[in-house]
Amino acid sequence: MPRPLITGSFIDIQHVNNWDAQSWVDECRDWREENWEAIFEDMKAIGLDTVIVTNCAIWGRPLYPANRKTVGLQLPMPCADPVGAIIRAADKRNMGVYLGLGAFGRYSLNANPDLTPEHDTWLANMAEDLREKYGKHKALRGFYLTAEAHTIKEGGLFAQDDCDKTARFVHRIRERVGDAKLMMSPANLKRPRPAQLEPLLRQLNQLNVDIFAYQDHAGFEKLYPDLNFYEAAEGYQIIKPLHEKLGQQMWVNCEVFDYTEKRPDGRRICTSCEFERLRRQLEVAAPIADKIIMYQYQGLMNKRTAQVNIGTPGAEVLHDSYITYRAKHS
Image (cartoon, rainbow, N blue to C red; front, side):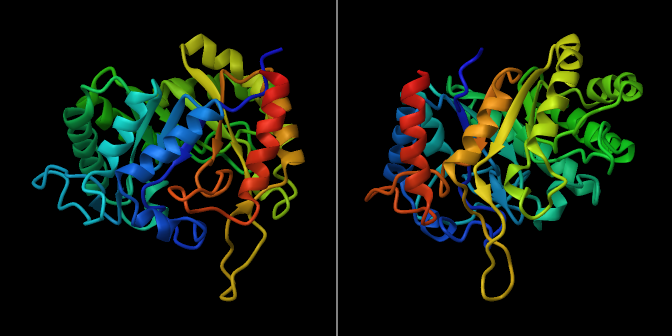
Protein backbone atom coordinates (compact mmCIF):
# COMPACT_ATOMS: atom_id res chain seq x y z
CA MET A 1 0.00 0.00 0.00
CA PRO A 2 1.35 3.49 -0.83
CA ARG A 3 2.29 5.52 2.19
CA PRO A 4 -0.58 7.73 3.42
CA LEU A 5 1.54 10.86 3.51
CA ILE A 6 1.15 14.41 2.22
CA THR A 7 3.78 15.53 -0.29
CA GLY A 8 2.34 18.82 -1.53
CA SER A 9 0.42 21.86 -0.37
CA PHE A 10 -1.24 25.02 -1.59
CA ILE A 11 0.13 28.35 -0.43
CA ASP A 12 -1.00 31.90 -1.07
CA ILE A 13 0.77 35.24 -1.24
CA GLN A 14 -2.52 37.04 -0.61
CA HIS A 15 -5.57 34.87 -0.12
CA VAL A 16 -8.57 35.65 -2.28
CA ASN A 17 -10.91 35.57 0.71
CA ASN A 18 -9.97 37.81 3.65
CA TRP A 19 -12.46 36.10 5.96
CA ASP A 20 -11.54 32.48 5.28
CA ALA A 21 -7.87 33.29 5.79
CA GLN A 22 -8.04 35.76 8.66
CA SER A 23 -5.46 33.71 10.62
CA TRP A 24 -2.72 34.38 8.09
CA VAL A 25 -3.68 36.84 5.34
CA ASP A 26 -2.72 40.05 7.17
CA GLU A 27 0.64 38.79 8.40
CA CYS A 28 1.64 37.35 5.03
CA ARG A 29 0.93 40.68 3.34
CA ASP A 30 3.99 42.01 5.19
CA TRP A 31 6.26 39.02 4.60
CA ARG A 32 9.68 39.51 3.06
CA GLU A 33 11.93 37.02 1.30
CA GLU A 34 13.23 35.57 4.57
CA ASN A 35 9.69 34.70 5.69
CA TRP A 36 9.01 32.79 2.47
CA GLU A 37 12.36 31.07 2.91
CA ALA A 38 11.40 30.03 6.42
CA ILE A 39 8.04 28.51 5.54
CA PHE A 40 9.59 26.54 2.67
CA GLU A 41 12.22 25.18 5.05
CA ASP A 42 9.43 24.05 7.38
CA MET A 43 7.41 22.48 4.55
CA LYS A 44 10.45 20.60 3.30
CA ALA A 45 11.03 19.30 6.84
CA ILE A 46 7.63 17.58 6.95
CA GLY A 47 8.12 15.89 3.59
CA LEU A 48 6.56 18.30 1.10
CA ASP A 49 8.17 18.40 -2.34
CA THR A 50 5.50 20.35 -4.22
CA VAL A 51 3.87 23.73 -3.61
CA ILE A 52 0.95 25.20 -5.52
CA VAL A 53 0.64 28.99 -5.39
CA THR A 54 -3.10 29.67 -5.32
CA ASN A 55 -2.97 32.99 -7.17
CA CYS A 56 -0.29 35.23 -8.65
CA ALA A 57 -2.62 38.23 -8.64
CA ILE A 58 -5.53 39.55 -6.60
CA TRP A 59 -8.40 41.66 -7.92
CA GLY A 60 -6.55 41.96 -11.22
CA ARG A 61 -3.33 43.30 -9.65
CA PRO A 62 -0.28 41.06 -10.14
CA LEU A 63 1.65 40.06 -7.03
CA TYR A 64 4.99 40.11 -8.85
CA PRO A 65 6.78 42.58 -11.16
CA ALA A 66 4.67 41.76 -14.20
CA ASN A 67 4.67 43.05 -17.75
CA ARG A 68 2.73 46.27 -17.27
CA LYS A 69 1.33 46.34 -20.80
CA THR A 70 -0.13 42.83 -20.79
CA VAL A 71 -0.71 41.99 -17.11
CA GLY A 72 -0.68 45.27 -15.21
CA LEU A 73 0.89 47.21 -12.39
CA GLN A 74 2.14 45.17 -9.44
CA LEU A 75 0.39 45.54 -6.09
CA PRO A 76 3.06 47.06 -3.80
CA MET A 77 4.17 44.81 -0.92
CA PRO A 78 7.21 44.83 1.39
CA CYS A 79 8.60 41.88 -0.60
CA ALA A 80 9.53 43.26 -4.01
CA ASP A 81 8.85 39.93 -5.75
CA PRO A 82 6.95 37.33 -3.69
CA VAL A 83 6.65 34.91 -6.63
CA GLY A 84 10.40 35.13 -7.20
CA ALA A 85 11.03 34.57 -3.48
CA ILE A 86 8.88 31.44 -3.56
CA ILE A 87 10.56 30.09 -6.71
CA ARG A 88 14.03 30.70 -5.28
CA ALA A 89 13.15 29.08 -1.95
CA ALA A 90 11.86 26.02 -3.80
CA ASP A 91 14.92 25.89 -6.06
CA LYS A 92 17.25 25.70 -3.06
CA ARG A 93 15.35 22.73 -1.64
CA ASN A 94 14.71 20.82 -4.86
CA MET A 95 10.97 21.41 -4.57
CA GLY A 96 8.51 21.96 -7.40
CA VAL A 97 6.12 24.89 -7.80
CA TYR A 98 2.92 25.32 -9.79
CA LEU A 99 2.01 28.98 -10.20
CA GLY A 100 -1.67 29.84 -9.90
CA LEU A 101 -3.25 31.81 -12.74
CA GLY A 102 -5.56 34.09 -10.78
CA ALA A 103 -7.23 36.10 -9.44
CA PHE A 104 -8.97 38.17 -12.07
CA GLY A 105 -11.54 39.82 -9.83
CA ARG A 106 -13.82 38.71 -7.05
CA TYR A 107 -13.37 35.07 -6.08
CA SER A 108 -16.43 33.83 -7.99
CA LEU A 109 -14.82 34.93 -11.26
CA ASN A 110 -12.05 32.37 -10.84
CA ALA A 111 -14.50 29.50 -11.08
CA ASN A 112 -16.40 30.98 -14.05
CA PRO A 113 -13.70 31.85 -16.54
CA ASP A 114 -15.82 33.21 -19.36
CA LEU A 115 -17.84 35.78 -17.45
CA THR A 116 -15.91 38.34 -19.47
CA PRO A 117 -13.76 37.86 -22.59
CA GLU A 118 -10.96 39.75 -20.86
CA HIS A 119 -10.59 36.98 -18.25
CA ASP A 120 -9.09 34.37 -20.60
CA THR A 121 -6.85 36.86 -22.40
CA TRP A 122 -5.50 38.39 -19.20
CA LEU A 123 -4.68 35.06 -17.56
CA ALA A 124 -3.09 33.77 -20.79
CA ASN A 125 -0.92 36.90 -20.77
CA MET A 126 -0.01 36.18 -17.16
CA ALA A 127 0.93 32.56 -17.92
CA GLU A 128 3.22 33.69 -20.73
CA ASP A 129 4.73 36.41 -18.54
CA LEU A 130 5.35 34.06 -15.61
CA ARG A 131 7.01 31.49 -17.84
CA GLU A 132 9.23 34.18 -19.37
CA LYS A 133 10.27 35.54 -15.96
CA TYR A 134 10.68 32.31 -13.96
CA GLY A 135 10.97 29.54 -16.56
CA LYS A 136 14.74 29.25 -16.10
CA HIS A 137 14.21 27.97 -12.56
CA LYS A 138 14.07 24.20 -12.19
CA ALA A 139 11.41 24.62 -9.50
CA LEU A 140 8.77 25.82 -11.97
CA ARG A 141 6.85 22.66 -12.88
CA GLY A 142 3.77 24.22 -14.45
CA PHE A 143 0.63 26.21 -13.77
CA TYR A 144 -2.40 25.81 -11.54
CA LEU A 145 -5.68 26.79 -13.16
CA THR A 146 -8.00 28.42 -10.67
CA ALA A 147 -10.92 27.70 -13.01
CA GLU A 148 -12.94 24.81 -11.57
CA ALA A 149 -15.25 22.77 -13.79
CA HIS A 150 -18.18 22.16 -11.44
CA THR A 151 -19.92 18.82 -11.16
CA ILE A 152 -23.59 18.16 -11.73
CA LYS A 153 -25.63 17.97 -8.52
CA GLU A 154 -25.89 14.19 -8.43
CA GLY A 155 -22.18 13.74 -9.22
CA GLY A 156 -20.40 11.57 -11.74
CA LEU A 157 -19.95 14.22 -14.45
CA PHE A 158 -18.93 17.81 -14.82
CA ALA A 159 -21.67 20.22 -15.86
CA GLN A 160 -21.17 20.28 -19.62
CA ASP A 161 -21.50 24.04 -20.07
CA ASP A 162 -18.95 24.58 -17.31
CA CYS A 163 -16.69 21.96 -18.86
CA ASP A 164 -16.94 23.81 -22.20
CA LYS A 165 -16.01 27.14 -20.55
CA THR A 166 -13.02 25.66 -18.76
CA ALA A 167 -11.82 23.80 -21.86
CA ARG A 168 -11.81 27.05 -23.84
CA PHE A 169 -9.80 28.70 -21.07
CA VAL A 170 -7.31 25.80 -21.01
CA HIS A 171 -6.91 26.06 -24.80
CA ARG A 172 -5.98 29.74 -24.50
CA ILE A 173 -3.39 28.94 -21.82
CA ARG A 174 -1.85 26.12 -23.86
CA GLU A 175 -1.46 28.50 -26.80
CA ARG A 176 0.88 30.58 -24.61
CA VAL A 177 2.78 27.99 -22.54
CA GLY A 178 3.01 25.06 -24.94
CA ASP A 179 3.94 21.84 -23.18
CA ALA A 180 3.99 23.24 -19.63
CA LYS A 181 2.14 21.03 -17.14
CA LEU A 182 -1.32 22.28 -16.21
CA MET A 183 -3.20 21.25 -13.08
CA MET A 184 -6.64 21.97 -11.70
CA SER A 185 -8.35 21.08 -8.44
CA PRO A 186 -12.06 20.52 -9.13
CA ALA A 187 -14.71 19.19 -6.79
CA ASN A 188 -14.72 15.42 -6.49
CA LEU A 189 -17.16 13.52 -8.68
CA LYS A 190 -18.63 11.43 -5.86
CA ARG A 191 -19.32 7.91 -7.22
CA PRO A 192 -19.88 7.90 -11.00
CA ARG A 193 -22.40 5.40 -12.36
CA PRO A 194 -21.34 2.97 -15.10
CA ALA A 195 -23.39 4.84 -17.71
CA GLN A 196 -21.46 8.04 -16.91
CA LEU A 197 -17.98 6.68 -17.55
CA GLU A 198 -17.87 7.10 -21.33
CA PRO A 199 -19.15 10.70 -21.28
CA LEU A 200 -16.81 11.45 -18.35
CA LEU A 201 -13.87 10.14 -20.38
CA ARG A 202 -14.82 12.56 -23.15
CA GLN A 203 -15.00 15.43 -20.65
CA LEU A 204 -11.59 14.65 -19.16
CA ASN A 205 -10.11 14.54 -22.64
CA GLN A 206 -11.85 17.81 -23.52
CA LEU A 207 -10.45 19.56 -20.44
CA ASN A 208 -6.92 18.60 -21.56
CA VAL A 209 -5.26 19.07 -18.17
CA ASP A 210 -2.22 17.05 -17.06
CA ILE A 211 -3.13 16.81 -13.36
CA PHE A 212 -6.53 16.60 -11.67
CA ALA A 213 -6.24 17.17 -7.90
CA TYR A 214 -9.75 16.39 -6.68
CA GLN A 215 -10.89 18.16 -3.52
CA ASP A 216 -12.06 15.61 -0.95
CA HIS A 217 -14.42 18.19 0.65
CA ALA A 218 -13.76 16.92 4.17
CA GLY A 219 -13.56 20.55 5.29
CA PHE A 220 -17.26 21.00 4.57
CA GLU A 221 -18.45 17.66 5.90
CA LYS A 222 -19.93 19.09 9.11
CA LEU A 223 -21.65 21.85 7.18
CA TYR A 224 -22.95 19.62 4.36
CA PRO A 225 -23.30 16.01 5.55
CA ASP A 226 -23.83 14.75 1.97
CA LEU A 227 -20.17 15.63 1.21
CA ASN A 228 -18.72 12.32 2.35
CA PHE A 229 -15.04 11.83 1.64
CA TYR A 230 -15.46 8.05 1.81
CA GLU A 231 -17.83 8.29 -1.13
CA ALA A 232 -15.30 10.52 -2.89
CA ALA A 233 -12.64 7.84 -2.37
CA GLU A 234 -14.88 5.20 -3.93
CA GLY A 235 -15.22 7.53 -6.89
CA TYR A 236 -11.44 7.85 -7.21
CA GLN A 237 -11.17 4.11 -7.76
CA ILE A 238 -13.77 4.26 -10.52
CA ILE A 239 -12.30 7.22 -12.42
CA LYS A 240 -8.58 6.44 -11.99
CA PRO A 241 -8.53 4.13 -15.06
CA LEU A 242 -9.98 6.95 -17.17
CA HIS A 243 -7.16 9.28 -16.19
CA GLU A 244 -4.60 6.55 -16.83
CA LYS A 245 -6.04 5.99 -20.30
CA LEU A 246 -5.58 9.68 -21.08
CA GLY A 247 -2.12 9.92 -19.51
CA GLN A 248 -3.34 12.23 -16.74
CA GLN A 249 -2.28 12.15 -13.10
CA MET A 250 -4.92 11.93 -10.39
CA TRP A 251 -4.02 13.66 -7.15
CA VAL A 252 -6.19 14.00 -4.06
CA ASN A 253 -6.45 17.39 -2.36
CA CYS A 254 -7.09 16.70 1.34
CA GLU A 255 -8.70 19.62 3.13
CA VAL A 256 -7.16 20.18 6.57
CA PHE A 257 -9.72 22.74 7.71
CA ASP A 258 -13.18 22.89 9.21
CA TYR A 259 -15.63 25.48 7.96
CA THR A 260 -18.09 25.74 10.81
CA GLU A 261 -16.78 28.62 12.94
CA LYS A 262 -18.29 32.05 12.35
CA ARG A 263 -17.02 35.57 12.88
CA PRO A 264 -19.22 38.07 14.73
CA ASP A 265 -20.45 39.34 11.34
CA GLY A 266 -21.63 35.84 10.39
CA ARG A 267 -18.96 35.04 7.81
CA ARG A 268 -17.39 31.60 8.16
CA ILE A 269 -13.65 31.13 8.61
CA CYS A 270 -11.23 28.27 8.11
CA THR A 271 -10.00 26.61 11.28
CA SER A 272 -7.65 23.63 11.65
CA CYS A 273 -9.29 20.22 11.66
CA GLU A 274 -8.63 17.51 14.23
CA PHE A 275 -5.86 15.12 13.25
CA GLU A 276 -8.06 12.04 13.57
CA ARG A 277 -10.17 13.21 10.66
CA LEU A 278 -7.08 13.95 8.56
CA ARG A 279 -5.75 10.48 9.33
CA ARG A 280 -8.92 8.93 7.90
CA GLN A 281 -8.71 11.18 4.83
CA LEU A 282 -5.14 10.10 4.14
CA GLU A 283 -5.81 6.42 4.57
CA VAL A 284 -8.74 6.37 2.14
CA ALA A 285 -6.86 8.47 -0.44
CA ALA A 286 -3.49 6.70 -0.33
CA PRO A 287 -4.40 3.46 -2.15
CA ILE A 288 -5.49 5.27 -5.31
CA ALA A 289 -3.93 8.76 -5.44
CA ASP A 290 -0.84 9.41 -7.55
CA LYS A 291 -0.04 12.13 -5.03
CA ILE A 292 -1.67 13.53 -1.88
CA ILE A 293 -1.64 17.27 -1.41
CA MET A 294 -3.41 19.46 1.12
CA TYR A 295 -5.19 22.72 1.50
CA GLN A 296 -3.14 23.97 3.16
CA TYR A 297 0.00 24.00 5.31
CA GLN A 298 0.15 27.81 5.58
CA GLY A 299 -2.10 29.05 8.37
CA LEU A 300 -3.79 25.71 9.05
CA MET A 301 -1.00 23.20 9.76
CA ASN A 302 2.18 25.20 10.23
CA LYS A 303 4.31 25.53 13.32
CA ARG A 304 4.52 29.10 14.61
CA THR A 305 7.98 30.65 14.68
CA ALA A 306 9.42 34.15 14.64
CA GLN A 307 9.55 34.06 10.84
CA VAL A 308 6.30 32.13 10.28
CA ASN A 309 4.13 34.19 12.62
CA ILE A 310 0.75 32.82 11.50
CA GLY A 311 -1.78 30.11 12.17
CA THR A 312 -5.15 29.22 13.61
CA PRO A 313 -5.17 28.16 17.28
CA GLY A 314 -5.11 24.48 16.29
CA ALA A 315 -2.44 24.68 13.60
CA GLU A 316 0.52 23.62 15.73
CA VAL A 317 -1.41 20.75 17.31
CA LEU A 318 -2.28 19.45 13.84
CA HIS A 319 1.33 19.94 12.72
CA ASP A 320 2.79 18.04 15.67
CA SER A 321 0.23 15.22 15.38
CA TYR A 322 1.07 14.80 11.71
CA ILE A 323 4.83 14.75 12.47
CA THR A 324 4.27 11.86 14.89
CA TYR A 325 2.08 10.05 12.36
CA ARG A 326 4.55 10.61 9.54
CA ALA A 327 7.40 9.13 11.59
CA LYS A 328 5.43 5.88 11.86
CA HIS A 329 4.83 5.69 8.10
CA SER A 330 8.14 6.92 6.68
